[in-house]
Amino acid sequence: MREQKPKYQQYLFRNVNWHDKCSPVSQTMRIPTIAQLQNYQPSAIEYRNIFFHRHTSPMMATSRGGSNPMDTIIAQDLNQLSFQERCAVYEEIHGVDSPRLEEETEQAVNTKLTALQDEIERIAIKPAYDQAMQMSNVYVTSRKFLLMFLRAESMDPAKAANRLVKFMERKLEYFGPESLARAICSSDLDSDDLNNLKTGVLQVLPEKDRSGRAVIGMFLKLISSLPYRHPASMVKIMTFLYLSMIENDDEAQKKGTVMILYFIGDGPFDWDHGFQQSGGTTIPEWLPGKFKCIHLCTPPNLANSIGHAIANQLHPSLRVRFRVQSCESQTECHRKLMTFGLPVHVIPVTTGMKLKTGTHLRWMAKQNTRDASILQTGNFPGIDLPGSHDILLGRGKTLQEHLGNQIMRSLVREWLFRYTEADRIMKTNIAWELVTRIKQGGSRFLARSDDGWWAEVIDDLAREKVSENAEIL
Image (cartoon, rainbow, N blue to C red; front, side):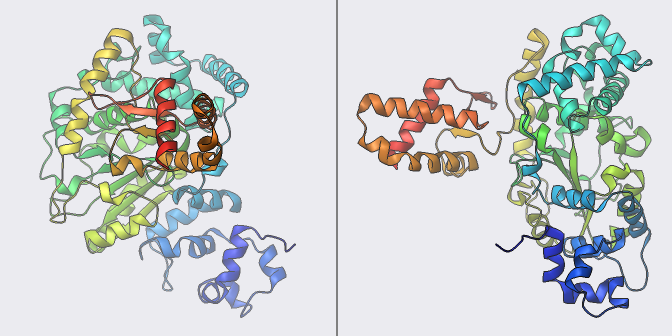
C-alpha cells in the first residue's frame, strides 16, 4: 500500500509550481525533489505563504516588495511555534481540529479537577477567590465551574488555575463582590450596560459553525453611537454575553468560540469604544473559554490601520489566530467567512447594511428566566445553543436539517430492516437500544421550552422520537 504523506507534504506536492514562485526554496532549485520536500521545514514566513495565502487578505500576504508591520508581528509569533503547532493553529482556524479533542473519561476528569484545586491553593495572592470562598464555596468549587477553566486550557491544571484566579479578580472589578459566589446575571449590569446590550453591538449568532463552535459578532460600524458612560461597559456586556452562552454548553467549552469583528458599514469609525482603556482585548486571557479565531471584516482602506491596532493588543497565542478579511462589499465578506465554515446566513445584517436586533432582543428577554433560577438556586440548566450532534425535537425544516437529526436518521436506517421485521414489543426494545447508543455517543435529545431555552427531555420522549423516525423512513 502506498504510504500516506502528512497534510503539509501533500499540500506542497500539489502546489509545487505556485510554491516555487513565492518561497525562498526557489532561489536554489526550480522544483524541489521528493527527498528535499520530505525533509523541508518551512520558516514562519514560508509557512504563512503556503497555508494562509488563499485564506487571508492582501494585507496578510507577504508582498514581494517587503512586509508590512502586521506581517512582521504575525511572523514573529509564528516563529515561536513549531511546525506542528502551526499546522494545529491552521486547522483550528478552519474548524477541522475536532478529531484532536481528547475523550474526557470520568477518571481523567476527576484527576484533573483534584490537580486544579491543588494548583489554586499554591497561588499565594488571590484575594477575589479567597473572598468568594468565604462567602460560599459551593459555586467556585463546583465541578461545572472548574471544568470550564480546564477546558479553556486544554486540561492543563496549572494554566487553568492562573486563568481562574485572573477571572475572579476581573469579576470583582467589573461586577462587584456580590457576584463572586454565583454566576453573573443581567441584574449585575447597570442601565448603561443594558442600553449598550440592547443596541445589538454584541450578539451571539443563533447557530454554531460547521465544527460546532459558538460564534459572537461585534458590529461597531453599524451603530451610530453607544450610550456608555464608562469604558468598562463593553467588557461587562461581553463577559455577561459570553458566560450566558457557554456555561451549560460542553461542546462550545471543548471546541472553542469564534469572534467576528464586523467593521463594514457607514457608521463612524471607532473600534475602541472603551476596550483599550478597560483592557478589553485581554478578555480571551481570563474568560473560561477558548477563542479559536478572530476575524476582522473591514474595507481595504482601513485594513492596515485597524488590523495593526488590534493585533498589537492581542496576546501572541491569539494573535496567530487573528485574520483580516479585506472586503469591498458585504457579499465578498460573507463569501470569505464561508470558507472558514461560519454560518453567514444568520449574521444579523441586512443587504442594506442595517443591523437586525429581533433575535438578539428575544435572547435578552429569555435571560429573565436564567436570572431568576440563578438567584434562587444558584444554578440554571437551560441550554442556549444546541450542540451539532444533539437531536432536536419539534417540527420544521430547520430542525430536521440539524446535523444531529441527520445522524440519528442515518443510524435508524441502518437498523430499519430489523425494526420493520420486529413485532411491537421488539420495536420498542430496538428504539430503546438506539436511544442508548445515541446518548453514549455524547448526543442529547433536546426540546425548546416556552421561555426559549433548550432542555434535555426524558428518555420516553427520546424513544418516541426514534420510533417516529423509524416509522416514517
